[in-house]
Image (cartoon, rainbow, N blue to C red):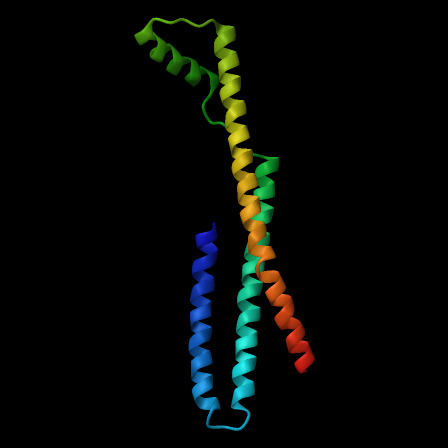
Length: 148
C-alpha cells in the first residue's frame, strides 16, 4: 500500500519542483521574486504533507477494517481432511474425525490471528503516515496564515 502512495506523491513533488524552479528563474528578474519562491515552497510542502496524511488516513481505515473482519480462510474442511489423509498415508498415522476437526479449527483460528496481527502492523505504519507529516502541515499552514 505504501508504494501506491509514495510513487504518486514523489511524482507530484517532482512536478512541483519543476514548477518551483521555473518560477524561481522567472521570479528573480521581477520584484517580489523571493516571496513567490517562498509561497510556492510553502504550498508544495502543504500539498505533499496533506497527501501523505490523507494516504495514511485511508491506510488506517483499511487496517481497522482488516482487524474487524480479517480475510477468511479459504480451504474447506473436506479439502483439509483430504490433504491430511494424503499426508498421513505416507507415514501411516491416522487421526480421528474429532482430531481432524480440532486441527482444522486451530488452523483457521491461527490464520485469523495472523491476519489480525498483520492488520495491526499495517495500522501502526499507517498512523506513522499521519503522525509524521501532520505537524509539518500544521506548522506551514500557520506560517501561511501569519503571512496573510
